[in-house]
Image (tube, rainbow, N blue to C red; front, side, top):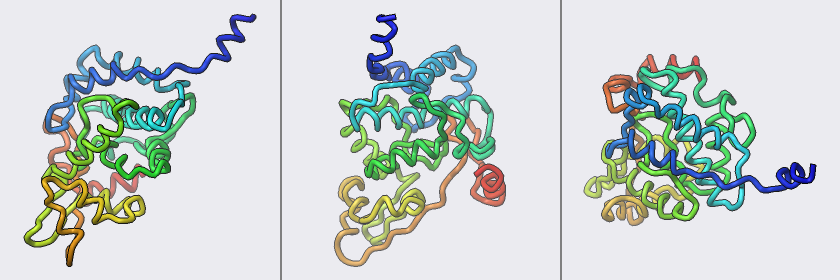
Length: 251
């Protein structure tokens, strides 16, 4: 009886992200594309499920950095697991209510991908938009390592810079004084109260300096919702009528 009471009083252990780190290095390439086909065919589904069972909790909530890193990893890992369940598929929007349904377990509670994102947004760090990957080609780069509390600041900085440096996702034209950036900056405009300053800070090689001096313009690129697959899945998925029908059916 005493042993049971002691065990109940013990704090939950901090999560070990090494298994998730290994999987990212194995199945994500330098272009941030995922080899879903190989992953689904391998025995590594079990490894992912074992990691997600630890995420399901409860886990230690010891510091803001630890909480933030776990939630980022949880969002990305749960998204990949959801895609693997349905693969092959052109887009996450081809699956049933991918973002709003509370079908996932995190820290002992049922939650949705949207709820995880909302909790991260309440932490007041706009860089989280540079690290959450919803399985789309228009998403920021999927980092080939797990986020960990002790290196989180450096990882957030690096991934934000990598995101803005990818010409498929963001384009800076100092000559025309125009930044053509991801629609994420439009959808979550409230998280970027001084958008031009943010873009100037993280743009590659000072290419965004023009945004902080004189007349400049920010435009938004169309978002590519096709699957971030290493294979052809999602390559031709467009933002046209097909996407809007999928969105209305599954939002």
